[in-house]
Image (cartoon, rainbow, N blue to C red):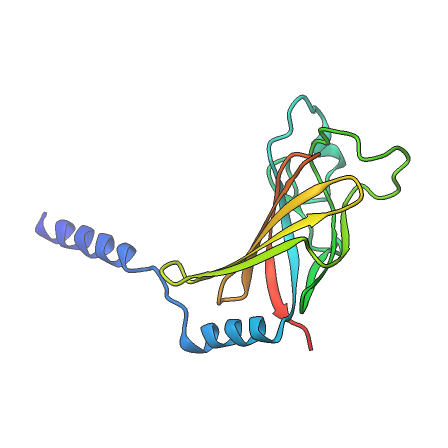
Length: 176
């Protein structure tokens, strides 16, 4: 009985210490990439806020997807940062609250230019860099929060004035 208790305590202690901190090299790579101002985010999956009143939508989604997580592996998408400019082309899955325009040929999130406002903050405790962009397109305002982690994973939160929110998960990499 004592052996089982010891094993249980060891497993608990091991699981509590499994939080991995970033290495100095990973933090240095992240900081140097941000200093250069040339990097790109590419999403592997999109997670829209739950679809309401939509039945049968899962039959229209890419293979390996469901309404909570949409696979974007073979779907071209990006958010590129080049100094103070953004270049964004992301597919959108969700509900449109207000009409952006009739006969729109692109229902995704598209933008090229300088955001109205941008801020950057490093959270030392959680080891993540948050970049916040306020973007205005012809018919919509977007607040985008790009969270970069030293291990090159990233998360993009998009809140729109005309659509439901969506989250993208993927990787970031420097652009040469």
